Image (cartoon, rainbow, N blue to C red; front, side):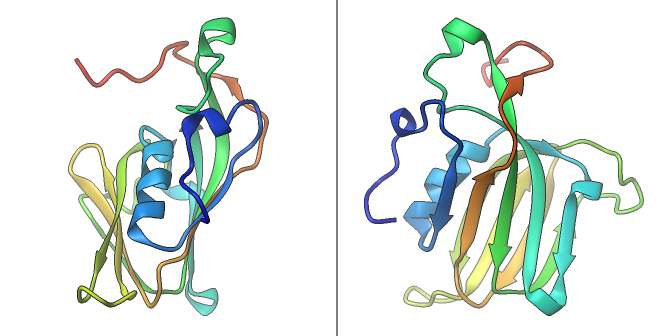
Length: 158
């Protein structure tokens, strides 16, 4: 990114963002907080060195929520340059369980290294961890927004 993304920049346009450093990834993390997906919506392609998730993302950047209500949008969250993927606290046989993203973070191997780990922390003590050669994460909306089934924004005060 050449400049910091702001929530106001989202407006009604679909998002298409790339993260190439930890600061960029913090922006992506804030936009995918409370996104939900199932294991069926996840694809690990070792030959392509890519981990892709089709998520139902809450539109935190939407400034018109008071006008039309809470919305979600289907988005692709893609991690490239992946050397391996591991998980914790997930039942890989339960492909229909709904997983909720709390955050996406980057842990470099060393203080000056671009290689390391991208970790998706999930509600319920679950996590996905991708070992990467270089940080490259993209977030792209792929559908039109739709009204959130609950009709409400996620609430972290309860």
